[in-house]
Image (cartoon, rainbow, N blue to C red; front, top):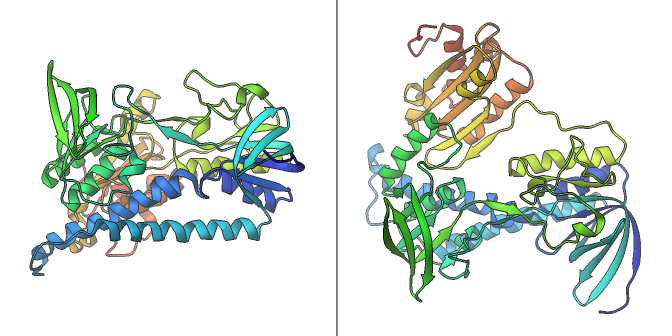
Length: 473
């Protein structure tokens, strides 16, 4: 190591993902001298190895699906669709690079100093940052930890980044696998497995519980399960993976199903069984930050840890591991540090799964609402009755509105169907604004469009649905 240099800053942000870079920009806007440090790329996991690249692959695979089924619209496509994975990956990387460049420009424009290096906390208000062959000492007044999460590894089948892979490697495959084995039926495994199935791979999903997308309302997953079968994906539930090995050209996965052990062979095995906080090697113990039993950093409603000048946001702080939650918390932490009276205070968090069809939900399910003591009324409107969904040949699924029976206040919305990842925003706003079903039903929606089913479902809650039969309340 070369000489140490001590620098004083108002705010040190560690981690340049969806939380970190947003926190850095907001704090700089509020007049703070900010240093943002990350050992990897700007944008973090979401932009480089998660949300964005996976959705690019999903989008490309959806194009393949539509081309293959174009004959239903009278469009004759001769020959097989050729998927050139190196070119697909190159296109995907181009999107990532464009967005990364945009973040770099925003940080520079807001006066944030960005350092590519590895940070380690040595004592209160002091951090060492390793930058190539040099180590610099930083003194900070406030600290925001935005250090994210990592894929959980199976001890019996550790990642080798070749045949036994995480989602990171799955996004960089240079070929469409003949057979992709996916361990884990959560949203990451399901999304990537579905994408590769549409590209032409045989896909087998092994899920340890009795259902895919555990924790998601069964009324939504029912439609997804049917589509998985139509795509040709094999789903095996109650499958207990015992281990696996890379044999060179393929991987053998040992799994116990109904008490019997089987060996499932594939080109690759994607292990996607969850994520864990990336809190182990940064020196949190040196400054006394308290973690919970799972290793997540404990915070209050101002994103403060047990140490007043140390904040944590995003995946490392637990709760729902969502990029948009990290960005939300980022602004709160930056504003609290700048003297504003900001707190975590939301009524509805959007959840989106880019399956086929897409799933989105927010607020309370009908079951959850009843468990909280609400007397509820709900109404469901099918995309089969929506002109726009039919005209784009993507009409499976529905929108459901759950409301309080007496006031008709919207408590939750569940969707499965075309582009519901975009449609959920209106539902989140309705809940945040304290809207009732009448507010939604009286809001004029353009015709023919996909958002109309939310209005139609709200009309059903009011008991005067037009394009579907009203159910007895």
